[in-house]
Image 1 (cartoon, helix red, strand yellow):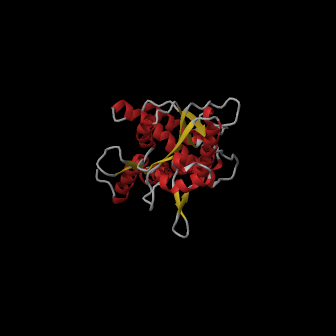
Image 2 (tube, helix red, strand yellow):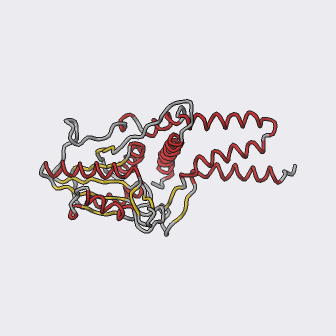
Image 3 (cartoon, one colour):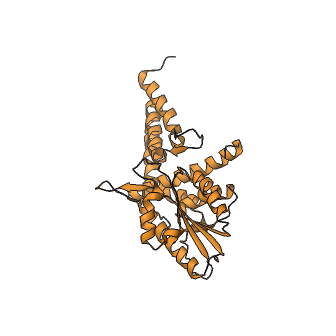
Length: 285
């Protein structure tokens, strides 16, 4: 039976929305040069509900109620919290303190990798680190200061390309901030071509091996650490996870935009972890 134009459009929305979280934009010739459109995940879910409303006329009320409850649970935190907890395993829910008695010892040659977290365009057109990156910069500087005080050689590797297509890469944008935080210019290495966490690990590996580092730290946010550790270990590195900051969900009855952002981030990380295992099985990683 021929479908109406409205039903055909709704079917198309379902197909597109279902694949939005995994949408890729290709760059250069390498099949691994990808940028994930992860900011569209919640929009994709909303589009799915809308399409179902169009297609399932007999159960429209049930679909509408389900959509309202689903997004309320996300925005009020009751669903966002378990999602964020999955993305931030218990081992990564405390910021790393380089001065704590249980902190990892520094080796004779230590490498500290700070992973990128995006850049913002300011009103004057200049670039600045996104909010989460400031904590990464502070922890990276604190780690190097402790490392130098211990008498070892300590290199800092800022890893991050330009997935947002801004005027400069993440690593190049972060460099002045890292120098201002106390990182010595001669100890700073910029890896400015990576577009994904997998590429961060791949591109950093030869730098770490060339330095013959016997201790490696990876600095990133708690929500990002689980996926980062998978990628770095895939390339034969076994870093110490240095969590710069931990996100929290505020539970309540009223919806909060911050909870939706946390849910979006958690879904992105969980999809990325699942994708890692699928690609590993397929031999792509």
